[in-house]
Image (cartoon, rainbow, N blue to C red):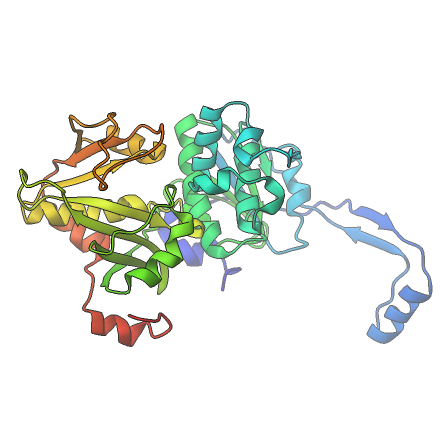
Length: 397
């Protein structure tokens, strides 16, 4: 169960620093006794005198000495998390101008893109919507994107969102915090399932009544299963609205779907390179990850897997993209080199043509085949009949 002791969940990955003690001085609130409270008392055998007492936890002095990037305060509802968090500060309230797009509510474009990517919200169509039309999960992410900074307090972290969103967002935001070396970011939550993806330095667990050092906690691995499908039209209908170009799918491409815990999370489509000068060369035609799973590195895992597979066959493998995050990833990865066509607009040959002002970047995979990548990151896609048997809820497979 989620509320069991962290030591039982993570074993050698964490150590106890100190125990917590409740204060002897209660916080007191009073209400008037009326017919409603009297009826509740009578029906539920509760002897209530109008006085509510709560004994919060004392803040141990050791917290003054802790230097951290990320700290979590976790515990069941009513355990005193919010009261305890006030030691670190107050949560910032975010105001949005709903006459503007999400991206237009930030200080500048560069900061907006970096922050939205930092919470795993990589969908450009979503960036162009106002805050008041977003889903709960999307709204949670964009609020977090504006709140995250040195000495921030994030209360009710992941409390209102799907657990897949909680994990993907946690994985993204911890990378941003450590990249920027943000200091003393405090996350308060009644959940504990995201701890090994957020990877805090310390956890204050009010259920266990102690503070844990979690700096040696191993990072959670996310293993994908990949399947090739002929149901290309159905798959593209599922993913098209989330593709940043919103272009059509070339149905002569080979289409693969990715599953995480039996849930569809992403797709990749591959095409032969439209040139007779390079034999057996292939390129990424479409790459899409569903919004709830953006931030787990699924897109780059898919690219790495198929690039590695083509390296095994000694087939050249290319990708051409105008997506800022992908361009940044490839430019910093030694296994990819920028081609002569990178940064240049393609001629209108109907294949690679981009009919706007975006700058396309082209890369070729030059990494060596890595057998460990096949073993550890994904499971090789299975035959069509096996997919039909295992995923009957998906039509046309």
